[in-house]
Length: 320
Image (tube, rainbow, N blue to C red):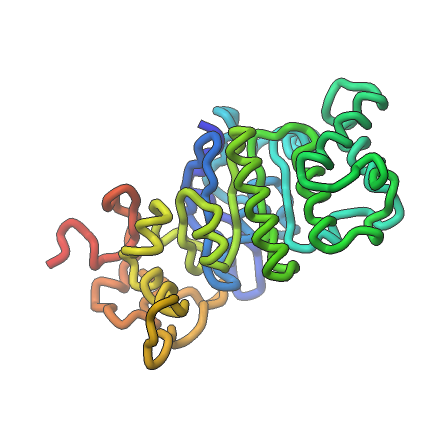
């Protein structure tokens, strides 16, 4: 097993009390598997990703639960040890490549320094590996481009370099947080195809954080739907995209136009995602749900359904 998250909760102290932007989140990612984490803005997707790699901004912190990587618990490691794990065993790809690369250093130096920091190789071997990584992520003529600066590359090429940096220490898992949002549609497709190929060829796990269900359909193997900091449904891509169980998942899918159909209007979800300080008791989706009833004032737990699980009283074993 590559990555296991159990009952992860993130807390932020505030004047109004303790906020929990991530609450009781659990999932697993197997070697070579891509798990998509999808939801609206403010659902807790990026906060979950930051917690996994130890990059929560103070005063946010993990208050309960645990994170295991290949059987080793990593959320309780010292800051120094966690930095080693983050670089060596967990790679990160963020949405804006411009902020992920140092503008004053050549691409080759950034790749080489990352390799030297985590692998027992000399500078010559680091440069050879840097060239190989550039070639692997689709940078043409890497021998001519390795000493260029970030501003000399297009947005799509910079994102390829960021992916190469994430792969430099040969990690077991990649956290990809909205990796294509800043790119145009044609470049998005190329980057998604690259990530899918790398995950398959390297048997590398990936957590894909996105609000775009089209990205999920193209890249993920399984999907976890998160709402107000809680996972409310998890299952295969086919189940979530074609037969979702949770009312939120259903309405989220209904917002997307489909080829071959001409509906009078797209589905709308009334209201908005609750802020962490105003998450309602029970099911957080209750105020926006058309099927809510009195039991929804209690918080539902994830229960197994098919090849996944759903947190909704409409699918509880004793629901009538």
